[in-house]
Length: 40
Image 1 (cartoon, rainbow, N blue to C red):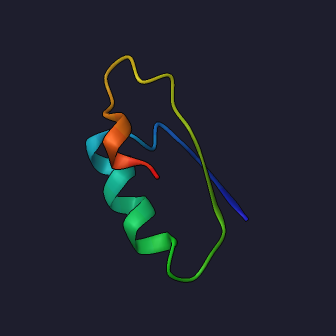
Image 2: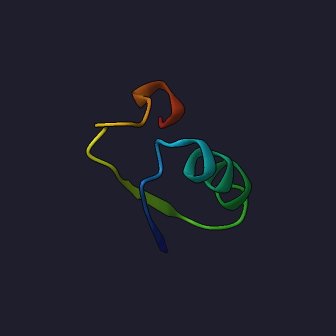
């Protein structure tokens, strides 16, 4: 299990797309700068 802080931002969302194929991913983001559509 991997925790990604800032996962709705540009870099975090690309990192999640790669990690989700092999790991369980938890995303933590306050969405002040990120995009909620980047995270399921």
